[in-house]
Structure formats: C-alpha cells, structure tokens
Image (tube, helix red, strand yellow):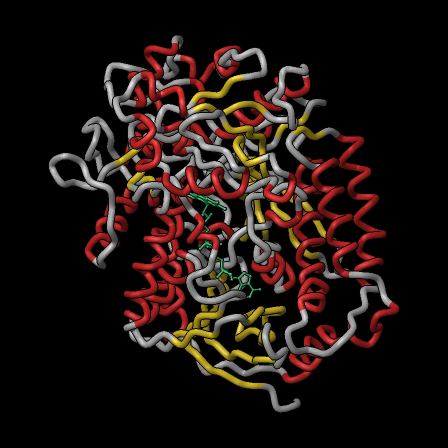
Amino acid sequence: MPDYQQHEHDVLVIGAGGAGLRAAIEASAAGVSVGLVCKSLLGKAHTVMAEGGIAAALANVDDRDSWKVHFADTMRGGQYVNNWRMAELHAKEAPDRVRELEAWGAMFDRTADGKILQRNFGGHRYPRLAHVGDRTGLEMIRTLQDHGIHQGIDVHMECTVVTLLKDGDRVVGAFGYERERGRFKLFKARAVVLATGGVGRAYKITSNSWEYTGDGHTLAYDAGADLMDMEFVQFHPTGMIWPPSVCGILVTEAVRGEGGVLKNSEGRRFMYDEIPDNYRSQTADNDEEGWRYTQGDKAARRPPELLTRDHVSRCIMREVKAGRGSPHGGVFLDIAWIKARIPSGAEHIRKKLPSMYHQFKQLADLDITETPMEVGPTTHYVMGGVKVDAETQMSTVPGLFAAGECAAGINGANRLGGNSLSDILVFGKRAGEFAAKFAKEQKAPSVDGAQVDAAAKGALEPFERGTSGEGAYQVQYALQEMMQNLVGIVRNEPEMKRALECLGPLRERAARVGVGGHREYNPGWHAALDLHSLLTVSEAVTRSALERRESRGGHFRDDYPDKDNAFGSFNFVVRKKSDGAMEVARAPIPPMPAELKQVIDEMK
Ligand SMILES: Cc1cc2nc3c(=O)[nH]c(=O)nc-3n(C[C@H](O)[C@H](O)[C@H](O)COP(=O)(O)OP(=O)(O)OC[C@H]3O[C@@H](n4cnc5c(N)ncnc54)[C@H](O)[C@@H]3O)c2cc1C
C-alpha cells in the first residue's frame, strides 16, 4: 500500500454541518478520540445557510404547544410514513437541545420577557421556531464550532471522502482526498458517522450548494447499507427565479411566517383555492384571520401560505401552468404589503428578514420592502437517506451511523420547515453518543490495503483519459436537466421510465470522463468524482418513485394523484444486490403504540 497520509480515530465523523458537529461533540465528551472531515472549510456547511429557525416545542410564545403537538404536526406533515419513534424522540428532545445551544452561547431573538422568541412556520400549529432574524443556521454553526473546538476534535477540512473501508461486515474507516493538493488520506476508525447532508445537486434548480451531491447516501449504499424513502424529495415553494444566475436560491419560509402572501398575476391570493382536507380545520378562510395568526392571535388559524411545502409548491405550479404566473415563470411573494398594517413596516421587514432584504437587493436589485418578489419551487431537501435505528442512529451496517439530512425516518413523506435544525441536534447527539459506545466495544480497526489501493486507482482514472475524455460538467448538467424534467415536482410512469433509460448512458458517459492537469486545485477532477454519487442517488430516487404508485407528501404523481392507504404501511428501501444492481424492497412500518396513536387523535 503506498504511503497515504494516515489518521486513526475511535470515531470518524464525515460532515461538519450541525449533525456532524453535534455528533463529534458528543463522541468527544464520551472520552473517545474523534476526527471530523468536511468537504469545504469548517463552518461552511449547509447548516450555515439555514434561515428560518429551529423547531422545538419550548412553548415560549404559545403555551398550548408541547412535544405532543410537535409530534402530531411532524407525523401529519410526513403523511404518517415517518419513523414514529424518531418523530417522538425528536419532539421530546428538541427543547433540551435548543436550551443547550443557548447555554453554549447561542444568541436568539427574545420575547418581551426575555425568553427565546419563536416564529410561525408551515405545518407547525403554534409559533415554534427559535430563531435569530433569518440567520439561525449561522448562529448554530458558530456556537457548535466554538464549543467543539475546545473538545480536542481533529478537523480535516477540505477533504472529500470517496469510499468507506470495511473489515468483513463492519465499517473500519474511510478513504478520501484533499481538495487543495489532491493528496490521498486514509482514516482508520472503530466507528464512522455519516453527516453529509443532502442530494440537491442532482437537480438543475436547487437551493443546495455545490457540496450536496449525495455522497453520504452513496458511501452508505456502496458499503451495503439500506437507503429509505428516496422517492421523497422536497421542493421548497419559494426559490428565487430571476435573474437566471441566482435561480433556485432559497427565499425563506420566514417571509410567509412574518405575513408574506402569495399572489398570481391577477393579484389574487390563490392559496385559498385548494385547502387539503386534513388541514382544513386549522386553516384561516380569510385574509384578516390569516394576518392575525401571523401576529400571534391565538384565536386565529394559519393563513394558507403556511400549509406544507409540497402543497404550496404544487399550487404555484398550477398557477403557472394555467397562465397566471409572473413574467419569469413563478408567482409573486409580497411582504411589502404589511406596511399597511405595521407602523415603520419597512424597518420591521429589514429587522425580521435581514438576509432576504440583502439577498434581493444585491442579487436582483429589488427592494422587498417596496416590491413583491418573484418566486418558484426549488429542490431543497431530501427526506430519504440512510435507514437507521431510531435510538442509536446505526445503519444496517455495523459501525456505520448516520444523522441529519443524510439519514431517513423522522420526516416521512415531507419535512416541516425548522424540523431539520432540530433533527440534526437531536440525532447528531445520539449518533455521537452511540458511535462512541460502539467504538469502545471494538478492537482496533484492521484495514485491507487492497481496498484502499482500488479506491485510489479508481479516483485517478479520469487523469488516464485526460482531456480526450468526456467533460465532467457536461455529464453533470445532462443529469441535472434530466432529473429536473423527468423526476421533478410532478411525476408519472412514462417519464420516470425514460429517466431510468437515460441513467444507463449517463453512467457510461461518466465512466468515460477525462480530466486534464494534475491533482492540485483541480475542480474538474472533483466534479468527475462526484458523478458516481449523483448518479447513484438519482437512480435511487427514480426507482423508489416508480414503485410508489400514489401521491404522498413530496412525491406527487399525476398518473396516481391520490394518496392510497395501501402504501401507508411500509417504506421503500433501496439496497445494492450482490451483482451490483439496485434493488427496491418494502420495509413494513412497525405498529405505533396506542399512546402515540392517542396523541395523534387528540391533536386532529
Ligand atoms: C438555504 C437553506 C435554508 C434552510 N433553512 C432551514 C431552516 O431555517 N430550518 C431548518 O430546520 N432547516 C433549514 N434548511 C435545511 C437545513 O439547513 C439542512 O437540512 C441541515 O442544515 C443539514 O444539516 P446536516 O448537518 O445534515 O448537513 P450539512 O449542514 O449539509 O453538512 C454536510 C457536511 O458534510 C460534508 N460532506 C458532504 N459530503 C462529504 C464528503 N464526501 N466527504 C467529506 N465531507 C462531506 C460537507 O462538507 C458538510 O460539512 C435550510 C437549507 C437551505 C439550503
């Protein structure tokens, strides 16, 4: 085995967003040595981009809130195919995780009596999102980093892991490359936690940054782990659509939480046109009531703009298709109107939504305190991911744990806004705790040199083909375009079958990709290596979506537009067969205990 840079840790955490940092902190606190690897600079994970807030039933603003209401909201939002135990743990533990962040120094906006302020968000019955303006993720990352840095965690920044290493069934390490110098790194570990975030870059229009190519999903899949719920991709209703260079960048739901309304080209609030039955009793039927809700009137019901993201996205698509869209193919999101209701309204908007104000001013030359924004759906989040045990976060492969967006279960068919920041704290902590426990029980890892050499050889193949090979970016763009058009917001069997047919030739093209130059500072090479993950998650999404012959949450099919109860009792899992082909199977959902059923019934 050549002389790779070698590191050995008891627990290796791959990914340094909220889930990875929280896992690393917990593992380190358990007294084991911890390595933390991330693709970009520490502090630049997706978590830092989170705007709206962290969902936790602190009941600071509305004392009717409790873990029970949060649990019921999460299950309703996920259309009851969630892992109910994860939803329960999440609802019960999120408040403690937020208070812990506060104790570690996180700043939050405050109520008049000094408690953490909470705001309204789609699908949450009461104001539940702890926040700092619209920069909550930044504060979370800053706090976790500050806290973690004193725990003696070894950080390996700008390093991409390309494969996991196994000893028999067990995961014993990982292999990757430094993005700057291109040097290979070998990590030996007794336990590995995946916290690699999402898959948004498999689509053309996305709020996700370049890092989110589904690496953790693919690392786990290749190591033999089950992925679950991959058909459930969340298209956030409000992304920027103009100018083209910024298409997909998120416009936080907090805009609607603060009173922003959606209108079509006729100036009509079209969200009243279709209210799903299971939300009808909770939804305002006039503008006045909706406005009072956003201002904290406990007697009022939520405005229809704060229905779940899947529904709002489809309503926007309906308006656009019917010719009632905005000039650039979206609809209008108006927060400026609240000036009619609030004294110093413009100042209020700038204070509550500072990032949105600057984002539109700088990127679109538009003042959101004066002019409605043009918005449309953008690929935002993946509910599917590594199938994990609810208590420990261990995958179906011993020694391999997963937490945060790359793990599945808590969200079911659709995630409520704000539930990710709480998910990554709750399950990041659990993953770190149980990975440390597992590591303590294992003997030292033994790494097979042949596996490492094969990974290194595979990673260097694009250089052998040189500039005469296919361009990595061309393949990436073709894949993103194809997924956007054929496995997007509205799906059907013929299009998804076409998508599967396209994936074969795209894989062949990926195998022919060539790269010029050398290993230092070579983004073309990085893009070439990302293709395997992008293709794997795209296939997993497509195959699972084809099997789910109904519409539920983030998965909408115009050939099966209704929810079918027959699909409500299992999840689809994806795994690699011994011949390397992808298999889709059904995993029954265990029966929910009577006391949780009762909670759901009480909250209807
Ligand atoms: C614009 C925006 C706004 C959002 N707002 C909110 C909000 O207000 N509330 C909310 O709850 N959710 C929000 N979300 C969703 C939420 O931010 C994410 O789901 C969450 O932060 C994911 O955290 P994570 O720790 O799982 O992963 P991430 O924060 O995505 O971190 C992933 C880490 O994995 C690393 N990584 C990836 N692949 C590799 C590899 N191969 N090798 C090494 N490292 C790797 C990355 O470098 C990174 O460090 C928002 C998302 C976006 C994009």
